Length: 399
Image (tube, rainbow, N blue to C red; front, side):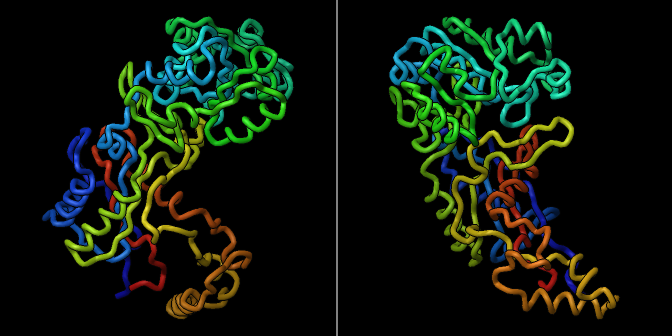
């Protein structure tokens, strides 16, 4: 009988990772032990994929920084007076503790929030409410007083937090004065200060360019805060504070760094132990959108910061239902199966622009696989920071 199982994604349980742990050794041992489990085991095959969350990599590295480290870096780079903090996401885990550090490094924070939602889809108010109020979000700049007059005190539908009130409180408790405005044009911040920290994630380069062209004196992004050690702190030379998470009330865990050697070491470990060549990646947030909350679940700067070379590229796939409904619409049963398998076996190396590949959007493999891993491991108490994927590179012809 032909093979009936396609891609399988497994969460692999692991010990709690601490600073200094040999993560390459630990991941290898966890995968090998899981494969030998009497009830849940599996056979390791060539081109299987081992993935691990960025969190356990950064924790093993000890890549942490304190609120005071953030404050010192902000003070050194902005001068310690008024700083405009624009377009942050609304997040207690991702941004709130960073904001505390930023506020400790300034006398005043002018916080400019995008509306009706932040960059990843967390809504302050609904777009319907904005339109009903006669506000044009493309051009209108709202003061805090005007925002409250129009929209009142709105709480996030999932967290129950009024982020406007929450962020203002954080800033003032850190010892800085605070002014909050609402706008979507980055240049609007220049009416308040010309020292600007762009806190958006995926649109930051554009925001910085616009502000520099408009004459801002100092323009930096979150990727330029803690991009080098401060008093021995952790850091990330490429992403800075982007991708950081709250560790505790005084500390953030930064995105991992220098881990290309790690994924290649795990690949070598499995090859030496089993004779099989697997691929390995480190993954963060998957790139997908929640259809109910309208939140784009992608607060990291990149899905997969480190991966082995076999994960380069994009899928090259035919659409089976297109073939069945068009090229072979007159066939059924075994004859149809053989025809489609034959078409797949002779497919071009590059199907871009071909109708038979319509609907198979050529996303990067690392983005697709990293998103699958994030959904598999979850973000709570599953205890599976390692994911093992089999059959990802197979197709309908694979036996």
